[in-house]
Amino acid sequence: MIKSIDEFYIQWHITDRCNLRCPHCYQTEYNSKSELSLSDLRKIADQITNALKKWKKKGRIALTGGEPFLTSGIFPLIEYLEQDESVWRIGVLTNGILIDDDIVNRLKKFIKLYYIQISLDGATQETNDFIRGKGSFKKAINSFRLLHDNEINTRLMYTVHKKNFHDVPSLIDLAISENIKTLTIERFVPEGKGAEFKDWFLSKDEIHNLFLEISQRSELEYQKGATLKIIKYRTLWAMIDPDRAKIPDVPLEIDLGGMCSIGIDSLTILPDGTVLPCRRLPIPIGNLTNDSIFKIWYTSDLLWEIRNKNNLKGKCNKCKLIPRCSGCRAIAYAMTGDYLSEDPQCWK
Amino acid sequence: MLEVDKILQLKEEYILYKLDVGDGKFWLFNIENGDSFKLNRTSYDMLSLIDGKRNIEEINRCLFDKYSDKNKDLILNDLEELIERMRKEKIIEERR
Image (tube, rainbow over all chains, first blue to last red; front, side):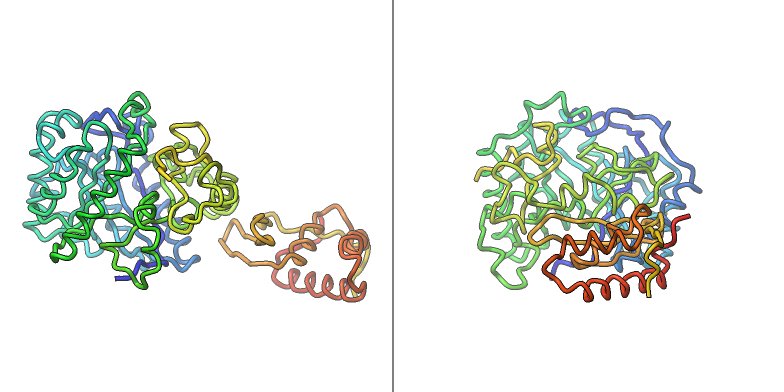
């Protein structure tokens, strides 16, 4: 499988409401004040699809929150989005707590619904529920099973930090045993509510050892023919094996490294239409209820600063791995206040 | 033939952008309909001078200064061609 270069990713947070209060959350507000009407959501959808057509990109749109299933607008919005030819795939990013037969039956009719991503923060009830709240592990696992029973593709999102990185080997076991197709292990970005938990941030050595362990395990599982794909085309991963990029048409399952997508092929939209370069980099660059998506994309100084990799500082500046890394700008910002500074977890 | 006292400007939906990497990358964007045009350095320099303040004679002088090693007739010809094309594409207009 070859990585598509024609994809544009939109992460669209349609509500701030949430039924969980995870300590490491990037949000600080959990109310419905900023939610838009379905008619306004459709206007934003039109802006997105117009841009996708203009740029000749295939849109992958992930709807999320907060907890997206707390809003009734999610189903008509998916229905609206999937009617447009420029929308290629739709995902829903959820905590999985509310998923039941009714929701699954409604989801099943969407042709372009490609995956439901559920977050876990531990491989066991003990670790997960300490972070996400009592009962959340069992409910999430039940949701995975219900979705699989109904042949809906799933992904597992794991935000890794000091309180749960020891669980990662067991998490991979869990993902395989539960028939989960894709596992994403994202580094914790201490912003929003999570800014109070900077001591959960992993050291360079801890991240290095963890990525090495995951990479080795991932290759082993790939050789064994496991169907689980562990996402590793993200920043820092390229350092595990800088020569991996030389392998022609390397399969995604064993690919390592990817550049930060800010300013290249992704945008984040908040419930009130505010646009962020990435959900974890909380600097507004416009609002789609007032600004055109083209104005934001073409005139944002922040996007241009990040697009120009000569602006990166410290180790990231002139790093030979830039085409496959460039560091996480959100982590740089959360830890130093400067989104152009070197990635604080780079072990190079 | 260009009327040298004419003052032209980019229409308000158009913006120019320069990225300082390598020898530079240059674009013209329409922020309303999303059109984008990749420019070479000379076209970028010329369009930057079409700013609603300078007339064509002044633009010519600026270009002669900047490209003093180039043939003046060639510069005039390039500018004329660019203006003609941009007017046709409705990218530039006379200052109101």
